[in-house]
Image (cartoon, rainbow, N blue to C red):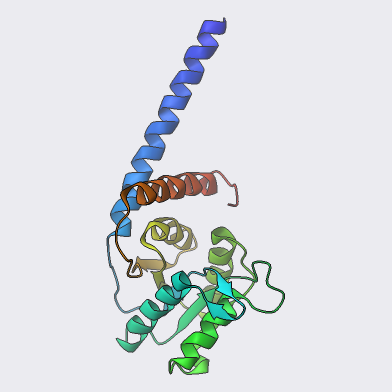
Length: 195
């Protein structure tokens, strides 16, 4: 009896590893694609802010969104991200201020300030888009992040296209871990776990 249980557990573990590996390959493939095309909005996923100033990661995402906006890919930019423990600033609000300081009209920047994770930020952004009648988005984030966000938006009927921010240079081990982590996050989201 114990042997059968161990065999069953081994099969389940092997299947789980294969599924995670398969999804991580898809995450990696998506991370290298720039699908930017005309859309209703450019959706910028939040990242850390430091006392009202964007972190280098957030700044790189915002600068990439600014390039797309100036290239007339969309007439609006939607920034996301909650406070993350900061009593004054939100990632989305800092993103909005940064974009306005770079010449984007305030009325062209929409903010989602409640999301404390990718799942919640994407859900809230999707709700905002649906209320505003926005049906397509260019997703701007780190490359490894885009697959999961696109799937979440597509589940809400939103056409989503990835456009990863420019990165310094590949780090094979870190990149591989991020692909696996995002694959697990995607599978947990599909199972109803909000991570």
